[in-house]
Length: 354
Image 1 (cartoon, rainbow, N blue to C red):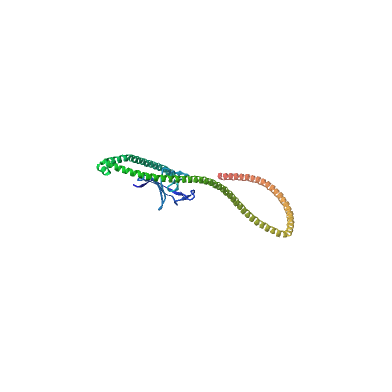
Image 2 (image 1 turned 90 degrees about the horizontal axis):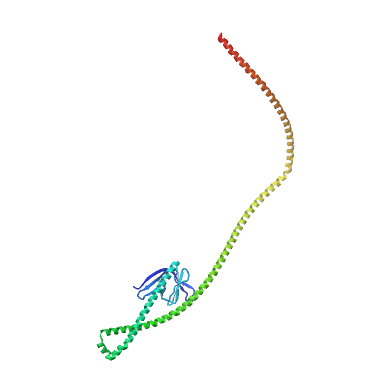
């Protein structure tokens, strides 16, 4: 079957700077695919990430590895074989949590696979030791029974099968010894790498503290700058208000200048008018004399009006008296007309009788 992907996600990939062991170096320009692969043939797990045609992560997971969450969206792990530290920046906390859970599962599976391989090695070693114990007896038997050729001529099928099994176990023991030496070398290398990684982690922890202090200092400076910006905005507002006031004062000054010009014009007009005041005084005296003459005439007219009013009252009284006498005359005339009418009626009756 080969290697098969068992989990896939996307993240920004980083590697620790190999020179300083402090700063992170971006391994990808953008978020790339990061996958867990399982090799059923070797019973091993790897984390693989490819950016275009470049392999940026090829890390075989061992039981000694640990995935550490350094922030809400960032995690890292150390690979002693690659002699580096990988970092992943995720888009959300959920993606980081899922990746960390999968890392723990794969780590446990790798531990189980290692334990099973160790059990097989121990079983092979025990079989080789038993076969080693049986080898002298077979040698003794061959020396007693004759030469090897004679033994081959006398041995049965069960002895031939036992010999082939013994040879196979010897080969396995030699291979296991070779692998044990190789594993011891790798283990020593891993220990040294782990020691270096521990030092790098300690340095990174110290760097984290330094970064925290720097972040606090940056925050303080940011707060100070914000206060300064607020002060500058207030000063700008005051300057704008002062500009508005200056504009208003400029308009007011222009208005006052126009009013001053108007006042100067009025003053000039008054000066011109002051030049004709003597003439106006003479005219005023003439007008005063005319007014006095008019007042005398008014008094005469008032006296005449009073005389006329007296005459009018007398005429009104006489007219009233005439109205009374005219009313009496009209009454007498009405009586006479009635008598004449009766007389006519009497005459008409007499004419009818005759």
